Length: 129
Image 1 (cartoon, rainbow, N blue to C red):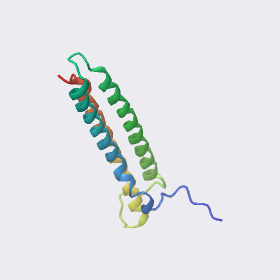
Image 2: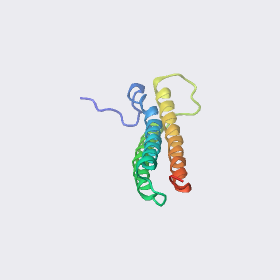
Image 3: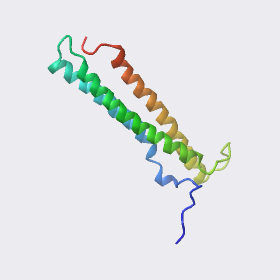
Image 4: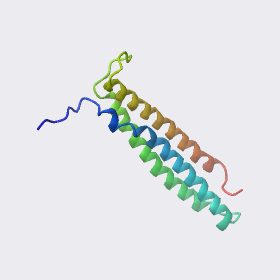
C-alpha cells in the first residue's frame, strides 16, 4: 500500500470546484441579509426597531466569513504545496493545480471583502429608514 505524497498538491479534478465556493458563500450571505431586512421592514418594523435584523445579519456574516476564510486557507495551502517555481513555463497538471489554488485563494479574498462591504451597508445605514 503506497501513501500519497503530501508535498504535492491534489490533482486538478479534486480542486476544480473550490473556485466557486467562496463567491457562492458571499452570494448566499448577500441574499440572506437583504431578504431578512426586506421581510423585517415590511412585516414587523416600527420606526424605533432596528435590533433584530442586525443580529441576524451579524450571525449570517460570522458563518459566511468562517466559510470564506476556511476556503481561502485551504486554497493557499494547496497553492503553496511543493513550492512551485515561478513563472509557470510549462503546461503540466501540477502547474494547473497551483494556478487553481491561487485562483481560489484570490476569489476567497474578493468574497471576504465583498461580505464585509455588505455588512458595512447595514452597520452604517439605519435599517428601515
